[in-house]
Length: 307
Ligand SMILES: [Zn+2]
Image 1 (cartoon, protein in one colour):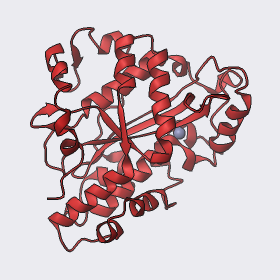
Image 2 (cartoon, rainbow, N blue to C red):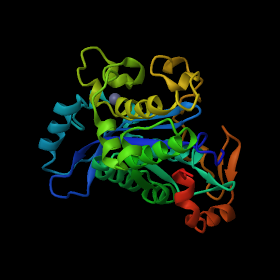
Image 3 (cartoon, rainbow, N blue to C red):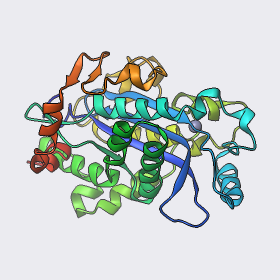
């Protein structure tokens, strides 16, 4: 991974959750999606899990029904036949989430930075609550700590900073964010409905099923729609057009990493040495300790400097 902002990889997340009937901080994730992209390569990889989060606390029936009405997602514990067997394999889902975040961690001067993901500010509680829930239910304290420590940043602010970077690279490029220096302009653009809301290519298999009129509420659709909105803004002006990962239309034929397999946690992660055999990338415990001390370069690494 390079320090070049065009090559830097960002991970975007979205969770569809059932809210706890009494606690604002506690949620129960039913669909979680994440996708990694760079300006240069477009969408690189995505992962989506449908989760049956059991047991739900008493009094959850109403909030579960609200989620079903909004998203078509099934009712946990009531419509279990609509979930797959892997929907209760929380350890594997948590391991897959960790593996993908770890693989695409940004680097600064060749070292890994803090683990960060991006989402819209209104989705912070659902995303943070999902990491907490997976961390508490994955049955693996090391994995749980990794998930709980994930930092969530504002996708609109990333959009804004990328606009400033692109403007510095090509001064003829200007949008509402570069003109008015308002993150809110980017937020509005990312939340604006667009023509991709009902495209199968960017929707998970569950929401693609015949008859679902809630494809636009699919977490995968949500994530990829916003990534493609960002890419559409910048790829032409940076002269990057041509990669299949840049366009919704060519997304299925893009050269993606193989879909993440449902590997058991123990086979993916050795207790003392994290090894991700797919990339040949590994960190030793010593290197992991270094991660704690490079936070000073964190913002520089995560957000591209406009100059
Ligand atoms: Zn979906």
